[in-house]
Every structure is written in C-alpha cells, then in structure tokens.
Length: 298
Image 1 (cartoon, rainbow, N blue to C red):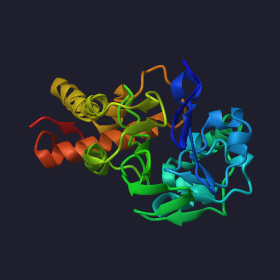
Image 2: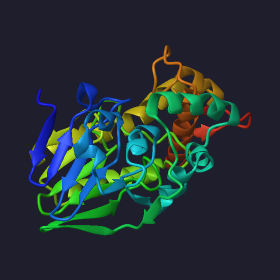
Image 3: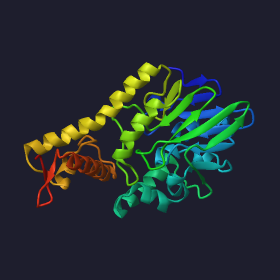
C-alpha cells in the first residue's frame, strides 16, 4: 500500500499498520499561504520537512497518540477546541481529562513520555465550534464540534476538497471509545448521527481505515462502528441475565479489552464505559439497581 494519499490540498501520511494505535494517520493541508497539520501522531516523527515545516497545528482532540509529534514543532502555534485546551497545556490538565486515580497516572506519565514523546504545550490556544482557518489560495478549514470521544473532539473539514478528518470516529472494529472522564456515551451517539450528515467527499480517520472516498461505503462503515455501542449494552445485559453483578464484578469481566491486556488505565476505562452503559440501561428500564449496589435485569 502507498504510504500517503493526496486529495487536492490535503495529504494523508498513513501510520504503521494503516495508523493502528499507538500510531495514527497524519493529515497535512497546504494552502497558498500556510501549511497546517491536523494532530501529530507517531508517524509525524518519520515524515521530515513536510511536517517539520508546518506553520500551525490544529488538534482535533487531545490524547497522547495525537500529541506525539508536538515536540518536533516547538515554534508552530497549536490550537485545540476550548473544551480540550487544558489537557493540551499541562500534565495536570491531561490528568483531569483522563480522570484516572493518582497511582494510575503515576504509572502512565513515564510511559507517555517514552512511547509518545509527551510534552505539554502551555502556549496552546483554544478555538470554538465553527472556527475557520483561511490558508490562502482558496483553501479553508472549518471545525465541527463532535464530542463524545472527548468533550472537545472535532471534525476538521477542508472545504475546497470536502476532505473531513473525522479523528477518532475511526470506523475501527473496536468501536467508539468513551472511557475517560470527559467522554460521553450520550454525546457520542449524537455525534455519530451528525457526522453522517456532514457535507464531505472524503472521510479520513486517525486510525485503521485511513481514507474513504465513497459515501455509501462510509455510511456502511459508520453504521457498523456505531452498532458496537448497542452490542456492548447487550453484552452487559447478558452478563446480568446470569446473575446480579456489582460494578466491580462487571469491570473484572471486561466489556472492552481482552483479559490479557495489562495497560495501567484499562480498568479505569472499563469502569467509566460500563458505568455510562448502566446509567443508560437504568434510564431505559432494561436494568435495575439492587439495594446492595449491584445491578440486575428487571
């Protein structure tokens, strides 16, 4: 497979294994007056002058794998949606963004520094939904706020080509991720409807799919991706059909990750995700809370 693709002013540099985490796909937009990078995954460290010479970095959202090239462009301004801004500016802000206990964060920080070249950007500034950047020569980028993965997650649309960088709406088999403190299952559900209505001709993901150029294919992949949410709810109900479970017991059984996965944040992500599903199932009347704090089917 070619390691890059071009769509007019937009170039996508594909990361290892088509941008599979921990890598990602790097988007660079060249206007008549400015060159802009969308996010900075690990592959940005292997691109060279085309990346290192960017005039601006616009982050679609903040997570460690999207900040892995910021250390290469210390003089380029960095902008991020205002809801994710603090997470970009400092470790304290990123810690709140994740929402993990102190002992998990203490184990995680050196991993991020070693594996993702983590450096906060206290100079980063915020943008709002609908923000636009005129890069010259008729090249314009617009931010569409589509939260759920994080509170500030945005789709970045280069309007002349209709090329939409949809970030971690990544169409992967894993499905939507909403396991952190600023994530939201309810918002992700709304975002999945909104991104389907976006006026675009190319859909570029941070991971896995890379670039999709056929709308019918995009909508099929999006439907499959979105279906993972209801599949998870059904998995939880199947566990509760066996017997009542506490939240701790459900976390031990795992909803997202295989049993052999051992990264320090996994139990936290499982807990946050399962809690969101239980809240939704309780509101729907599909699950009931027992007096001892466990959960059961009605």
